[in-house]
Length: 350
Ligand code: SAH
Image (cartoon, rainbow, N blue to C red; front, side):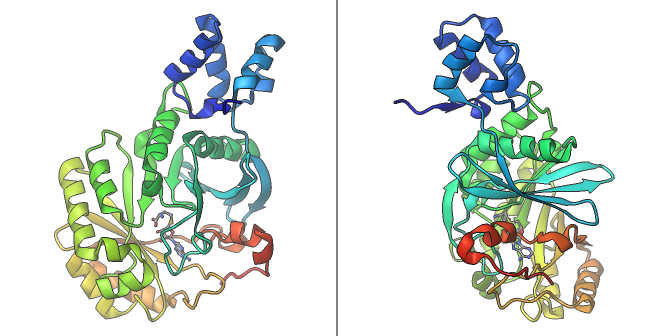
């Protein structure tokens, strides 16, 4: 039998084609679209005749995620583990800010980037998520929290630029006025530094914000922490970031996880400031989340403060990220890692 289509992955025009191919009038497509825009499963599309729902259900479905775990932090942050149709799972986090509610979404199950400090990549890549599956994460967070979502960060499990087509289609769906209508300016995408894809994004019309996970100021340290650096070294990456700014005029954020004794020294800060000199950039210092079986430890506060000071003195725009949800396993990939049975263990927070 033919594979069923996920309506959540389809644009308005594509949904129209599916409904037209069933010999149904155009207003039916509009009715279906109204439900898909809310993430409603086919069997619950209440204003459609039962016979049509059954017929549609033979050809299509709307991804609806099952909740495996839901944790609430004292600071209002909520963390979810959701299961997809095939039983694979991925994490999402809801963060409440004054300016709105932001969700952190996964773009892949597992990850193949192999960063040494990250829990998401420990078992490699299982598969990429479809546009509808990424969108289903947003609907599932709204369903579970009862909250509206105004901002999206593609910073959960996975490398978004290793799943670029699906991620771009997800962005089109979630920003569509017929869908959740979230402004592209409220969407951030974080990459470990895939240079050809950064260049593609630079020429893309979508107005999203780009974050680059830098984590070290030179090749020696960055290659040790992030294998992707062997393919796209620091100099090549920074050049791509400069091109990105030249083309888009949009400032890039650099993520920098502070790791004790590895990348948090005064020399590192000076080298980083020199690297970013003259660039419209913003550095986000992230206290490292401790990951089980990883030798890396978070930097002491005084190193973070000193690092921040040196960057500031050298004209680099810098902030230290607030640690939302640190009491609920908020480190990347930890919830899923704990959920994989052979990996289940006591919590390993700071
Ligand atoms: N693959 C993309 C997006 C997912 S990771 C990327 O690399 O940017 C989201 C962010 O969390 C990245 O900046 C990543 O380097 C960071 N991160 C991963 N593990 C971490 C940890 N243990 N502590 C702090 N930050 C971590």
